[in-house]
Length: 356
Image (cartoon, rainbow, N blue to C red; front, top):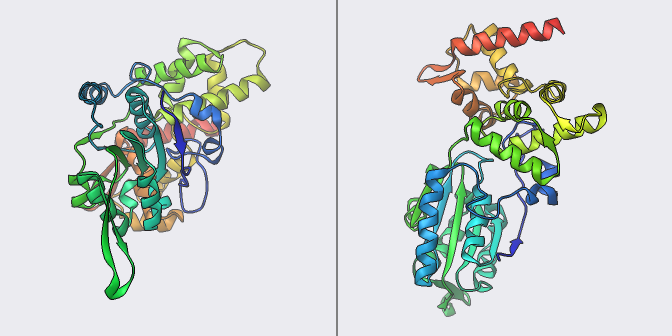
């Protein structure tokens, strides 16, 4: 059984203003410190819903490494946040029957952080580094020989009397997760034997995740309610579980029913201003600006960021990906353009709000 050693928690905020969005893909403050959030994580490939192609590839690799008695090849997982990169690393460790150490790139800024992590390893241990593209150059250079030759090169002494000392380390598996694979240096990318992408989940997969999570927290939920939750979860399990918790809170206060039905889901998420497509006020403000002020575009990213008072990187990495995924936004060489589907959705949402 894998023992998870959490070296540091994830310290990423959804945007530079420090605001936490209910439908944002990053971990909320409450989730970083919640044991219940971790209790919902799958513990095996069989429990892990979705990502079927990825699971097939990793199951074969894990079984082969166990048969040979070797450490699994170093693995890089990339894709949008909230899709299960950390969970998959923990599942791999569980399947291998080894310890998993969880950390993030900002926690490995100094060389001694890397050295301490590698020297204290046990054979075939799994080390998970989130946002690995943020590792600085010195940290990456320390990892190169460790990943390739199981060797840690240290400089002892200073000046003319300094010398290089190599320390052999046990075989291990580095699992690196990133939302920006292109930002990773070529030498680092080349040292990963396996590179896999995690994709957004479809509604059926999200429904299965919601039902599983509801069962784990002893919550009864109808088919229609789980379907409605899945529609608003933006293809992301983390958001699906978060919305389920908000619906449960609402039901405990405002409903005497023992089962979560679709009306409770709609009332709870309307209260949190999450619409039928999973859009919140940030998304609607973005679409509203494009539709009303700029007649649908094209508009440059920096212009939109200035008008909304947001950082352009936040818009590009947090707001726009989902709008593009559902066909509401197009990125062109001339700028951002809203689609006819987005205009229709915005007008319907606006009319609904007026009626209320």
